[in-house]
Image 1 (cartoon, rainbow, N blue to C red):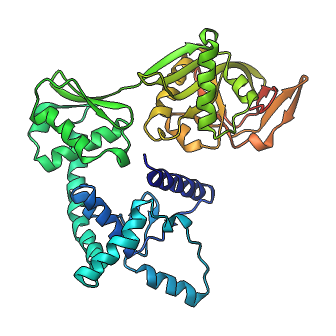
Image 2 (image 1 turned 90 degrees about the horizontal axis):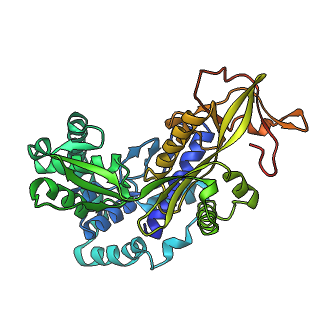
Image 3 (image 1 turned 60 degrees about the horizontal axis):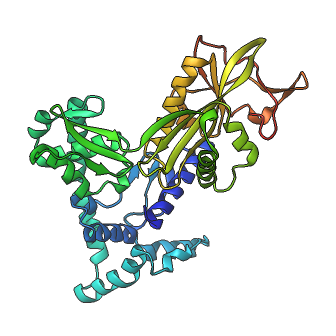
Amino acid sequence: MGPEAAARRARYDVLGELRTRLHATLVLLGHTRDDQAETVLMGLTRGSGVRSLAGMRRSFDGFVRPLLDVTRTDTETACLTEGVEWWTDPHNADPRFTRVRLRTRILPMLEDELGPGVAATLARTADQARADVAYLDAVAETTFREVADERSIPVDALAALPEAIRRRVLRLAAVAAGSPAAELFHEHVVAVDELVTAWRGQKWIDLPGHLRAVRRDGRIGFEPSAELLLVASTVLDPSARAALRELWDAAFAGGFTDEDAGHAFGGTHAIVRTPAGELLAHASVVPRELVVGDRSLRGGYVEAVATRPGHQRRGLGSRVMAAIAEVVREHYELGALSTSAHGFYERLGWERWRGPSYVIRAGTRVRTPEEDDGVMVLPVAEELDRTQPIACHDRPGDAW
């Protein structure tokens, strides 16, 4: 992933988190008609096909772009008239970035050589293409639901589809299996399509997101190309522990302390590792006594859930957490963790604890109100009343 794509992803992550915290219905984005023209032109130069002609969507997942019909100049003029100050990203003037060169050199040259209105024409083309793309995408999504089973699709069903729909179905299947949409390009989809249309015994097709497409037993399937390991802390030698610490430091941008690292050992680790030995994701579960009301439960406490930067949103975090959940169900009476990323864990079956939280310090329960909204649990043996008090024993660093 390039720096522009990484920055874009980070911006949307922050905006999405703020939307959740503020209970906002929508997030309004400031993209203008000029931004739309740049997006279309950049997609064409990369050979992204008709999808690039559709440009940026007017709305998606709670984000709305209300200014796509307004030029950048008109937007700035309106701000000046209304006395609204705006911030200009200094990277917007850095010619190292493709979009900046397009904005400052290519589009002005096209306007000079072809006449004014190129940006408007490109934006209008996006509107015209978007309806066609939306229809084909809708047909493909319906077809995908009809023919897909788990992580595979029958070759016969795919072969019977028109190319435009078949390739969209394969793209949907790859994304559903964990390949990041922003990095899954046309050449990847074409190569997977050849497993259907030009089968000659290909072994597999490598895809972004440490995923590969395979043809096996008359079906096209998707499977991880990085292995998942379940290991006990006791078998981790110093080099393995150092590799884990390097992953945690990278994932938490230096905010992972020695105490945090100490909390992560003493139980079972789920680790995703590439064939070359690079660690991509981790989660561990360690035994901790959890007291719910007046009952003492054998708790499995989850620590150090981390995915290496550049590999997020590829299903790796979900993969290690699924493995950890199985360990919790097999060996503990209750799983627990503390987080601010509620949505991620809720999608994996974890539930928020609604009652007050405590730590047990020198035999006395001490309230930890700052943790009340962060504790989540995975019930195992029975359904618990999640409005009861919950407590854990104190420890160095973060108690929860």
